[in-house]
Length: 121
Image (cartoon, rainbow, N blue to C red; front, side, top):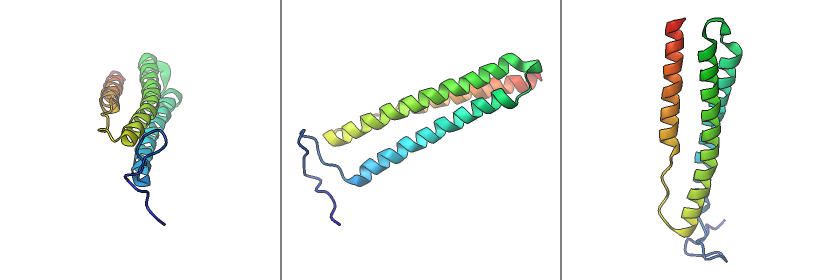
């Protein structure tokens, strides 16, 4: 088996990539998708399993926050995967991701909501 020539160019003038870089980009995408699925499962679990009698508003807010965050991470993962793939093919610098700050703020929000719900119970 031979490795692709890193100096080769495709018909569109883009560099032919070493498959290891594209696989690493795909693994990163799949890690973001696992995070999104975990958030989705958490939102469904909160909505399904938490007793709504006392904290219905918080239950709904926590569940919706998890679901919206899951959708944002899934969409952002795809956009980031595409941007990184294009940057690698063009030989440019890899783009930063907005997913880390979004996930940080989103999880902090869910944590605060859950903490307040626990204290009010």
